[in-house]
Image 1 (tube, rainbow, N blue to C red):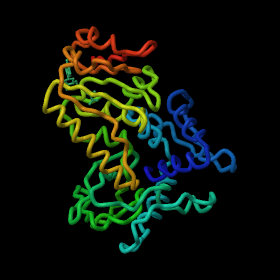
Image 2 (image 1 turned 90 degrees about the horizontal axis):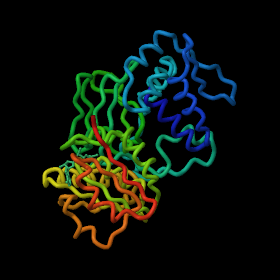
Image 3 (image 1 turned 30 degrees about the horizontal axis):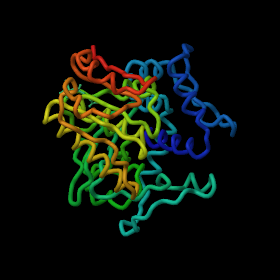
Image 4 (image 1 turned 90 degrees about the vertical axis):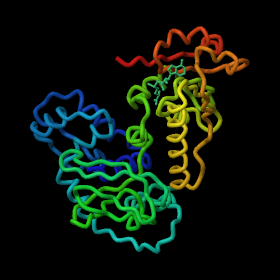
Length: 333
Ligand SMILES: C[S@@+](CC[C@H](N)C(=O)[O-])C[C@H]1O[C@@H](n2cnc3c(N)ncnc32)[C@H](O)[C@@H]1O
């Protein structure tokens, strides 16, 4: 299931056929008919796959917070099983050089390409996702690929050395013969699975905040508190290499956790892509309510507040918000 979904995502970015995903999403939310239909490719005239009303009800009942999970729960089981059986037997020689995958020159080649364009074979030091699905996700774990390490689960063991150097996004069988899907984490996966200090801004809420704040590449953004660093990472990606994020945190232990998570994502990214994730977040230990000195002379396109009693910080923050800028406040119920 995961393999197929990630293929669709890859294909959609190559062929601009984003309708596939949009259509799946709409189907899951808005249709009330007893059988749901998900077309894999409208243009080539292939048959739509039918979900029974039972499957549809089940997928609604076990609704995950992740949009990716929700869409993948609509994928037909027979197609997924074919992917799984085929992929599990792919053998790539361990001695294969860890080179970047080139962008495919044709759609045909693209379908055969084992990895995302621009990405390398799996490297020691990276964070990876392992998944086992049967109708829905039964096992999911983020792990650190280490020389001599082992991925242990009730489904069996996979030695880490068996993964290094191979492409991401394929099934690998455990010693018990059970296929586990091994892929690289999206930023959403990483944030949901990284070690936490305080509660994080959940991806669906962070996405809305980014929209409300209208964060754009090159923006200067103020954020507080850093907490576990989830929002910092989403902001880091949104402002890009030309932008910057100032992230203030009151507690030293939370500050350390946020910095560590940020470093881990950046390291994993550099191994995966062969180039650096922008180093654009400046973490500080400071009480936002009394941070006037630190903020002196600075202006921000937007501000994200996720802390207790945000109203107490407004007097300090608002003078530094550029005209027309937005201060978004996240208040957990
Ligand atoms: C819910 S957490 C933030 C989580 C963060 N947005 C994330 O996504 O990981 C709230 C954080 O705000 C910090 N905090 C509370 N009051 C603060 C203040 N006045 N100045 C700076 N940080 C503060 C807390 O210590 C805590 O770490």
